[in-house]
Amino acid sequence: MVKPKQDQAFEHRTTDVLPEDNETKSEKWSFTSWIPKFPNLPSYTGSFTVGCCDLTWSYLKEKQVFEGAQEVNHTSPKENKHMLVRLYYPAVVTGAEKTAAWLPSPNSAYAQGYGDFKKLPRWLSIPAMVGMLSFTSVKTFVEAKLSPVGPFTNSDEGDRSSQRDRFPVVIFSHGLGGCRTTYSSICGEIASHGYVVCAVEHRDGTANASALPKGEKELISYRWPPVDIDAEYVFRREQLLFRVTEIQQIIQRLERLNRGLGVDDNNPPTDMEAQFQNRLDLSNVVMAGHSFGAATAIETLRVEKSFFKCGVLLDPWVFALEHTTDNWRGPLVPTLDQPVLVINSEGFTEWKESFDILLPFLNANPQRDHSPFITIKDSLHMNQSDFPLLFQYVYGLKNKFGGKIDPEYAIALNNLVF
Image 1 (cartoon, rainbow, N blue to C red):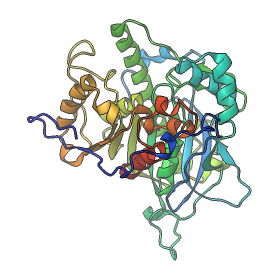
Image 2 (image 1 turned 135 degrees about the vertical axis):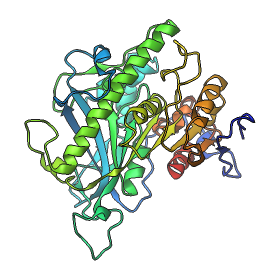
Image 3 (image 1 turned 135 degrees about the horizontal axis):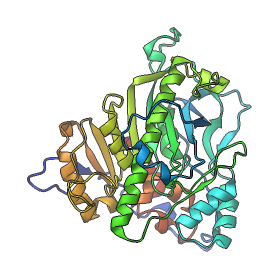
C-alpha cells in the first residue's frame, strides 16, 4: 500500500484481493504456448445485452463554449469537420444482429496505427494485427434496438416518459494511441449494467488512426510530438484543449438526441438516433477516461461543471494539465469541484514524479472525502485497456502489454471498482 504524505489526507487504497495462487494461467508456459490463439474478450456481467453503433457527427454551427477552441483548430487537418463516437447501450436482440468487430474499418489503417504507435515494423504489424484481430469480435450487437426497459423500470410499468426509463450516461475518452474500441471491455461492461456509454474517437491526432465510416476519406493518423519536452507540453496542451471542444460538441449532440432532434443542423434523426429520444438521463452524466483521456476528463470537468455529476479517472496522465508555473514542472492548478474516482495501475502509482504532482491536486478538491483513490496491485498502464486480453496467449507479449496480474482479473477489478 502506498501511503500519502502526512499532510495529505486523500484516501488511497491498494486492492488486496489477489488470488492466493499468484501464478496465473497466462503466465504458465507450454510447448504450444508460442502459437497465437485468436483473441477473445470476456463476456459482460450485467443484466442487459449490449448493443453498439458508430455515429459520425459534423460540427454544429453554434459557437464553441470553450475559450481555447480557436487556438487549437490547427492540431487536426483543415478538412476535419467531423466527430466519431461509438455508443454502447442496453439492447434487445432478435438473433439477426451481428457482433461488432474489435478492429474498426479499414482494418489495415487501424492495425498500422497500432503498430506505428508501438514502433513495430509495418511488414510485421499490419499482417499480424489484421490476421489476429480481424477475427476478434466484441460482445456487443451492431445497431441492436435500445432496450425498452430502463434500469429502474418495474416490469408492470412502461411509461416512456418516466425518469426510471432513462439511462445514465458515461462519456469515455481514450488515451494516446487508442480509439473508440480500445476499451470495449470496460465500456461494454458499463452498458450491460444500464448505462449509455459514448466512447469518443478523438480526431486531434492522438488516436492510433481515425477513419470515418462509409468510405469518406478523412483518415487522421497518429501525430508524434516534438522531441523537446517543453515543445511537447505546448503540443499536448493544444491537443487537450481540442479534445475538450469535441466533448462539448458531443454534449450538444446528446441533448439533441434526447429531445428527438437530428444531431446535425439540417437533417432529421436517423432511426438509430430516434430511439434515444427521452431515454437519456442527462442529470446523471459521468466523464471518464484513461491516461490522456483522464486528463481530458479533468479538463472537461473544469469547464463543464454543471453538466457532469462526477468523474472516473483511470491512470490520469497529468503532463498536459494547467500548471501553476509557465511549464509542466510546477504543481497543478486546482480545478476539480466534483467527486472523482481514481483507479490507478500499480505502475502508475509507483511513477513518483507523476504521483507527487497528482496527489496534492486531488487533495485540493473540496469533494475529496467522496473521491476514493484505488491502486490495482501488480497491474500496469495497459491493463486498463483491451490489449493485455487480446495478446495474453502470445508468448512474450503478455508482459509487454500488462503486469504480473492476470489480464482478465485486472479488467474485472477495474470494472468492479468503476
